[in-house]
Length: 454
Image 1: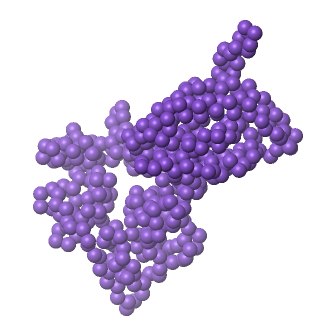
Image 2 (image 1 turned 45 degrees about the horizontal axis):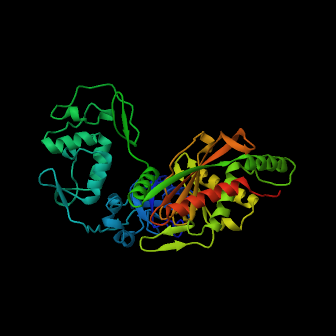
Image 3 (image 1 turned 90 degrees about the vertical axis):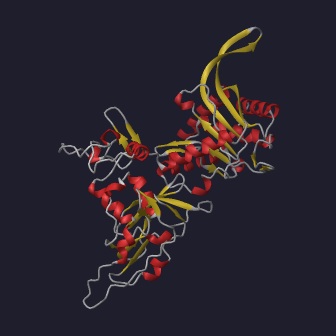
């Protein structure tokens, strides 16, 4: 498993492109995997045959751990298997490699079980990896044929049972455990999956073949479908919940006169058309440029709250919330305060595009990478919202849409003027309300008086 960035300790294996027994050429894709928020594919560096697969799809694998064994048919892999993870039960079949060369004995592979057996369904024993796989695939253990030592259910038994259709919904499994009722081998759910209403019933009469359910669908009915969370959704859910549970968050709202940045936007478009700049500078780029200027004047906001200490940054590492098909990502532009408006715009677009393509460097996605984050929902017409802090950062700015608001132009004259909404959420453990208010006002002042040359 490759190490993608210094902050990544493990990756989720999402899909095998090659399986045991497949021929492999240099450059072939072996498997797909993802970090917290970025996805990758691993290419083969050698040619040969896949002799063993040491993990299952969906497993979280430590970086630099062996995932597959590639070699020549009949090659002795016992030394590698002895160091395989948690008994390497997934490739149990690899302990019996096919040897096509006459007169060559199949090498013996010893599988070392390190975890004690877990008793389920009475006196039946099941390995920890098999138990986890059974829960993942919703396999009904009552119909699993055990082939492990001393009648123990092992992982390949679960795979065989899942392939034969001996599956049940999570609700059916829970009700069966609570009531002692038994689910039939074939139920009334999708692909013959046993549902809670099938408990205690005999197998139903032959029914029309159901369309196979997606592997992400846990349960479905006439008017609903239960899908498992994607890995990214799990990460987002965990981090957002932890942010609200472990900090004292408060949001202040303010608006700034947007006439200045609107005028600058027009100048930037004209400069792009005339070739004086080579990047399309947006309103959000101008807002981020103003935020950086404000952070340099309020260094306490440009910080991380660490519980019993605060980390203050001398440089501005600006995070930008990016909406992608795979979920929300927050890449970071390092040393953003060293960049011109053109450089900032170019860098923000580069990290956003990398997120959308799925090849972003995980190191700049880490919450610790950025010192402050901007989240812009103005393009969606959102007039006000409460952004959630990307801990351990001390604050985050939400940028809203531009709306006309009445303003005193002096001399008793009032007019409707375009204003851009600003929502600052800050951690009250790190920043006092007065300082947060002054910082938010400073952002508005920078927006209203921004000076940029093209």
